[in-house]
Length: 86
Image (cartoon, rainbow, N blue to C red; front, side, top):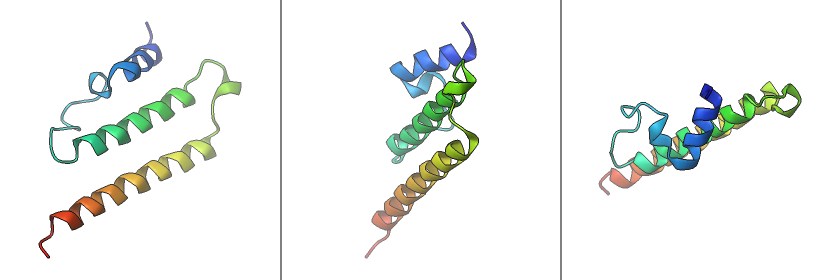
């Protein structure tokens, strides 16, 4: 089994099997971090398809990474606002 197959199989089960648990410590943002990492790993799977013709191009990969980042940061900002006393 190669790394791509292992990650692909693990994505179906859980992100926690392929990611360092220190990155996803059980905290109040766990599910958002898990969603972000899952999106990144899903994108990685698309970038590493066996056939080069099936892979997404680098511009699309960068665009999707930026969208993942924006979504994650927006979630973080929203969580910070909820924690601040009124």
